[in-house]
Amino acid sequence: MEILRKPLVKCLLFLIFLYALLFFTEQIFNANSKKQKTKFNWMLSKMNNNDDIAFLGNSRVLNNVDANLISSLTGKKILNLGFSGTEYSELYLILSLYLKNNNLKKLFIEVNPSMLIEPDSAFSFPFHYYHYLPMVNTNPLVSEVIKDKIHNDLYFYCWKYIPMIKYAEYNQIAGWQFFFNKFLNMEPFDSGGFEGISITEADKFVPTVGNKFVADKRTISYLEKIIEVARTQRTELVLFSAPLNKNAQFTEDFQTKYQSVISEVCAKNKIRYINFEKTYFSDRDSCFKDRSHLNTKGTKLFAQMLSDTILN
Image (cartoon, rainbow, N blue to C red; front, side, top):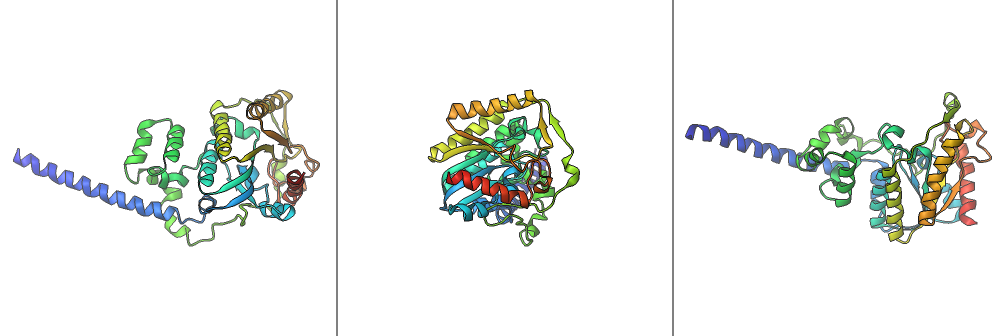
């Protein structure tokens, strides 16, 4: 028995040492993650702001809504809360984290077909877990949403309670190179959160026809959570759809089902909807980067349209 005890004690001590080492390494990674020059950290750094209007959405906000230009045209404080390839569950977290430390009078939420269907079929990487790794153990809302997204309790609890497991999974994004990224210029967005695109990709204008639209209930539930969290802050809400190029086409059945979902959400929550999808410059390829994103020429025209909407 004495012989067995010593190896077991040594093993136990080694495991304690290993856990402590991984735990303190994770604290270093957590602290370093918060120093990265990303738009997510830029958003988190906002404190005690009193914004007039924010635009929330994926790349169709990030690349389409020039907040600084709209601010100069309207005289109001405008913010772009657009994040590339992001769906409503993550946007719910983003808005909740922002409103925790800031005030917002009015919120424009972008809606489009990709945002209302099952996220994994719409985006290659719909939820950017690596942004939230430092918060999994400290923020109950982050923990709740990530647990809901992962769909596997054992997997989630391994993430939460075994140090460095989550960083090991996202090693290519949040690994050791993370320590050097903070010294690089990683801020393609401007002071209003807008990331302009100057190019037009001619090969991206091949006509496409959306022929099957199936709304995802969980996705819509997160859209309604966004509405709910905004309402608790007494933030006025508007849904809108950004311009599309003429080559982004939908069958009549697709369009009917898609617009029906938007109408139901707006009616249920008594929200105004503004549809800019088919606008006066939709047939001008020179205003678009591709079928669903404006270039800087197009964003200037759209900024004027949004400004007119805000002022009228």
